[in-house]
Image (tube, rainbow, N blue to C red; front, top):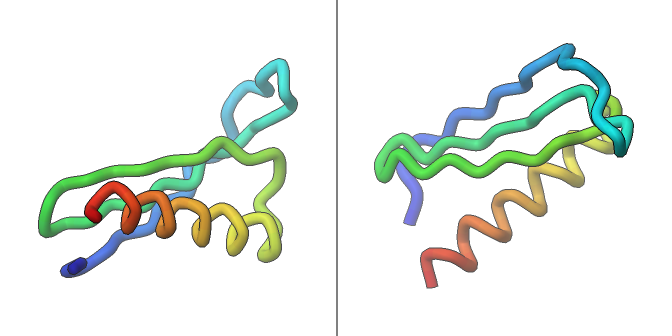
Length: 63
């Protein structure tokens, strides 16, 4: 299903109205598919939760 997946964290960005300051991205290099999510802080818990949501979205889009 996936080949190699890259994960990037873009920070710090100007704070949004929802207090997000970071963007976590996941890229499937085989298809060049990129999904991202804005997050408020870059703690392990927030990053893991965000990545799980991104991966579930990527898998759902492929089905």
